[in-house]
Length: 255
Image (cartoon, rainbow, N blue to C red; front, side, top):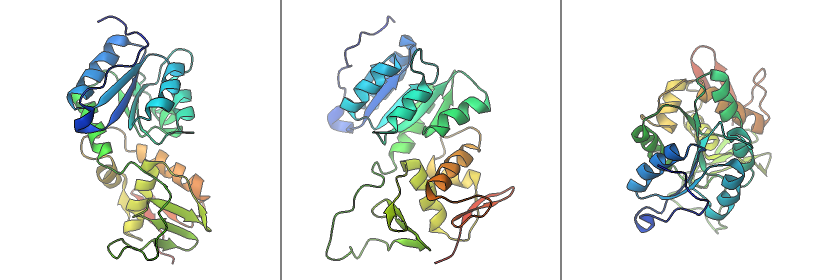
């Protein structure tokens, strides 16, 4: 297959799916394969081959998911992800030919939600994307003003100065909103659903990433680290998220 031109790909099955995907890889044949699998699943797909083009089109397309190669020329995938996180809450799946733990952690540390190591199965990639998209898209969005809270909506969870509104997918610390990514919110929501109960890394992965996910369990550690940093929660003297050495994490029970 030849390299694609810079024009956006046509929409395919948008009316049936409504999901938008941005595929970014400088290997045109690989990008085409990934795009074709997503199009079969009724995604509206746009492909770009450079970081600069990807950032430009992401503002216009507002994708639900970005499949992003780590090793892009010029602006690499790490920097693309870092900039993307300043204006988009899209799920980001990082593609990397580098199998070292350091490269994976670097990608996750700038806001990627998942990673896939090349070579990979396009079917598995699509399954993982589908699993992610079953989770709600909006995180930390303003909750509409209401005279009374919906009777069916769960009450916010309160941990001292921390309030977690699961229904509104909003987090406040000392009355101030905390901007979490969707994955960070989902981790906090899972932990806070059973205060005092220890969650293993694998249990969190199964609950948040779903069964198609395979890889190193330390993915959880990176995202928990992001949550702690945004909450100002010192791991050596935690208020909210506690480490249970050799097992996983638990949420404090303080009201």
